[in-house]
Picture 1 (cartoon, helix red, strand yellow):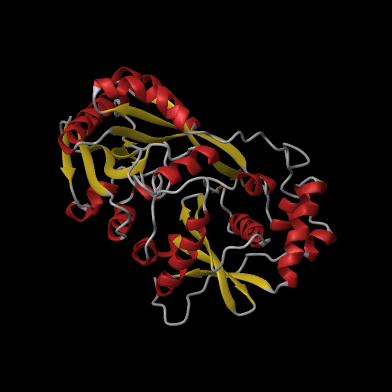
Picture 2 (tube, rainbow, N blue to C red):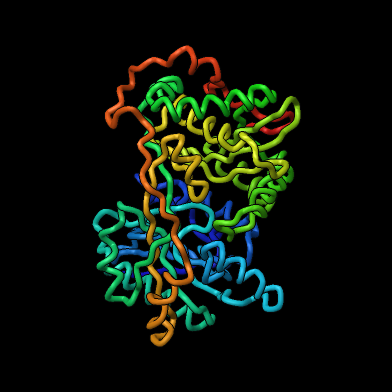
Amino acid sequence: MKTIIFHRIQDIDPTQWNQLLSGHSCTFSHEFWLTVEQSALNDFHYRHILFLDDDNEPLALATVYSITTDIAIFAPVALRRLLNTIRQWYPGFLKFSMLECGTPVTLNSPPIVLRKDADIPAVLGELHRIMHQLAKTEGHFLMVLRDFEANAEHWRPFLKPLGYHWAPSLPNTWLNIRWRSTQDWRHAMKSYYRSKLNKHLRKNEAEGVRHERIIDFAPLAVQLCQQWLVVHEQADEFQREVLTPAFYRAFSDNMGERAQALLYYRGNELVGHALLLMDGDVLRWLYFGRKTAANDSLYLYVGYSVVSTAIELGFKRLEMGLTTYPIKQDLGAEIAPIYLALRGTSAFINLFVGLFYPLLNSIPDTSTRHIFKSENISANTSGSASDNAASNSTGITARRPPGAKPS
């Protein structure tokens, strides 16, 4: 096995990099990493690793990056408040430079792309060797491989001999799409959840809230980023990457029609947005932003319209992301555990990683909610009259904003 390390994605032949991507997420693609690098997020520094077999054919690919991260990133509220107080005098308290393998702005499980005949332990061993050497040379406190959902549970025994601790992270949320229309989805809900949804939809309707789906939102990059920052600064569950207008521009320009946005208006005023990625048969809801922070019904309306978009466009699954679990569960999302593989750079530090990381970080207890009438829901059900009254379907043609160039 041979490896080539690149410090910029622009230095890699896109055809060679993307050769292994069949059946994998487009968030591993050359164009997605180009987007990430052009976005100037935080203090991320990237290295892209191409694994080659003895015939110099691509065997696997991975990206590692350094980032200054809060070791107590998932701390419970009381501990987070204490840390915020301490950091008024010591801003870097419990913040360390880490080396991660994964993607900084989305979730991928497993975090490495492998050819079908690749030897997982051999690739992991070589990846660990490279990461450990980089971490020691550059002074990183911790090495992290992220993220591992149920489809990657079998990687765990391969990581243990390399000294990695298996630790829970914030869970993901998924909705399997099994309805032919938005009305079918709503009709499948139990009456309590359907009535709750309808109440909030009526509130938004009374306030003149509407939405539209657009392609090429680059001209709105500054405004959308400002909206995202409003939400980011209010977050009390999880904060890390800080988006930039360059991210919105690059995401729209590089990903083409796979990157779209839902824009939310109250009257003629743009009051929010949801950023979407169309990734094969999966729709990914990446980010949400709004003009002003408020405790109102807008977020539930946004969640409703994202689900409706996934249904009307025929996606098989909707990824709804981290945090705000109760609202997403009310819409039918299921909680999917995520795990990280952690290893201290030095053997001494690694003795304490598995012990102290769980103590500093709290994973929310998200019990299962049975939102739907039946586990086996027919796709041929019809929406009731009360459902239709509050409906605002997203089955519309995406448009480009005035002045935007074609994708």
